[in-house]
Structures are given as structure tokens and as C-alpha cells.
Length: 129
Image (cartoon, rainbow, N blue to C red; front, side, top):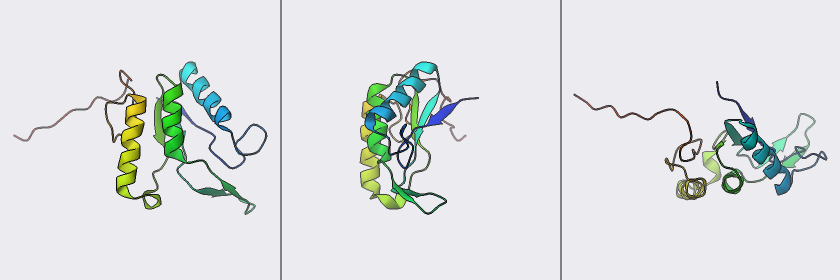
């Protein structure tokens, strides 16, 4: 079993009950990486509507994914969902390629983005007979 954590990305996820700062997000990601968790995850949403109808803004997931890749060493990175209607497919592909470059991943379009030498499922190719 692999254990990961969803990073604080908006709403009232910050330590003071407000929106988390980059320092807050970075600290959680680095602690997760150093503590041996397998992965960190991001929500790919523009906003969050709480049960009381309060609307909270959220940080952009792919920007944070690349930033967290730059400050962590071994943890896998991914988005909980990828909201395809938010971005042009070409932009999404470019963002994934940039995250791949920053993270050192072997698979540019894989989700989660994996780091080199990261343990994970092996990839095999089937050949037709």
C-alpha cells in the first residue's frame, strides 16, 4: 500500500484558517517527502464552495506541481483530477512536459509525474503474435 497526502491549495487550508501561502505548501510537501510518504497531490479546481455556500479561491495545480517538484527529492506528484475543460489540450500537454522536466520524470505524460529512480509499477509492452 502506498500512502500520500493532498497538499493545501486554497480555501481555508492554511494554518491560520485562510488560504495557504507558498511557504505553507512547500513545508507540507517537504515534510511529506522527508517523512517517507509516497506521493503528494493537488486539486485542479478554480474555486471551492463550502457546505455553507462560502466560495474560496484555489491556487493553480500545475504551477504548484512544478514548484513542489523543484523543492522535493523523491515523492511522486499528481493531480487528484485533471479538469480538461479548464485549458486547451495543447497547453495541458505543455504544462505536463514542463512538470516532467522539473521533476526529472521518465514519463512526460504520466500521472502522477514520477521521478527518476522512483519505485513504481513497471511498464511492460505487449507484442502481438
